[in-house]
Length: 372
Image 1: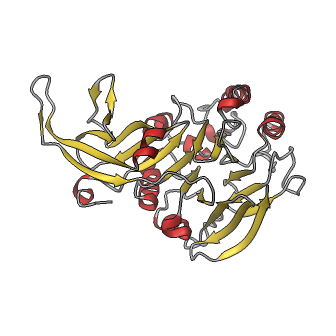
Image 2: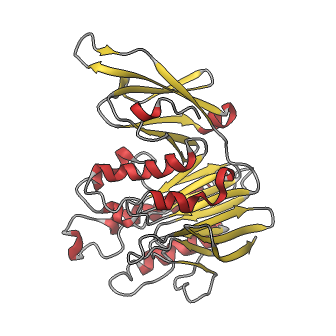
Image 3: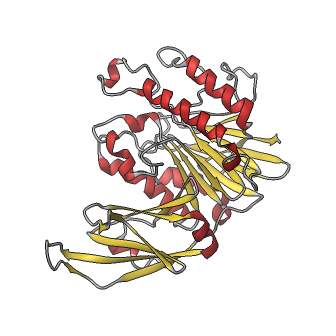
């Protein structure tokens, strides 16, 4: 990618997020811009009901997944805003740069999973570079910001994604429980990928289908830490209905032609019951496990949250609520050792899913191939 324009205009390279069957391209800028993207012969704008947006440092442009996969590149176009007025606004000439784009392959898919980065950037990026330029898909699975008390924390998501992918491959982003904390938590959908404002949704990249499941907070709504600011129990009830809707629509979701692999992405490993005050929603989580296991039959579930890494099979000590498939918790971080971090490198093949738990120096400390 030509990045000659990035230093003075863009904070870091753009990031391309997979949501449903579309890509949501986010770009964080340093000055007031009008922005749009050209894919093939079509142009897609960052607009609000026909009005080009310039008042935010975060631009979001939605493009059809099929079109970008086919085109193999996209052109970011923009004008610098000199003065925005009711009449005769003053803007610069059109500037642009083109980004090559590589869609996810059908087999031998290299995926890196990161979670619980808590505002760190350099160490997670170093850890996640395990596959180098062979990476096909990045998964950022919650608690990427440390909290939502400042809007600038949301930029950490796009900075990690931009620096790891250069906007040249897709990223999947899932919300974590820390993302619900802070006075800007209610604005998260403005600054991050989502499905019509919802943080739970499905996605399809190549032959990989996935469902993002958002557990919300990790303690009861009444817990003093939240100060009466959350209603996650009602949120989870709506999510149960969504999972049931996905199952009813299986033919256009996980049973669609070409789907070879199925994954569950959830920051909280909801089949793993923790001690008080974290042992919540057993009835709800048991139902989720049963619905997924009986109908979706996923190949793997990816989680973080616990700040440690392990692979759990159905019926293991970590499976208390009927785990729907093998569980990979791929996020090891200890605040007492700030220079150590770990994630999960996965390769989806015809034979199975090779899982390697790797650290910041790309050392593999656990490896297993999950047979399909």
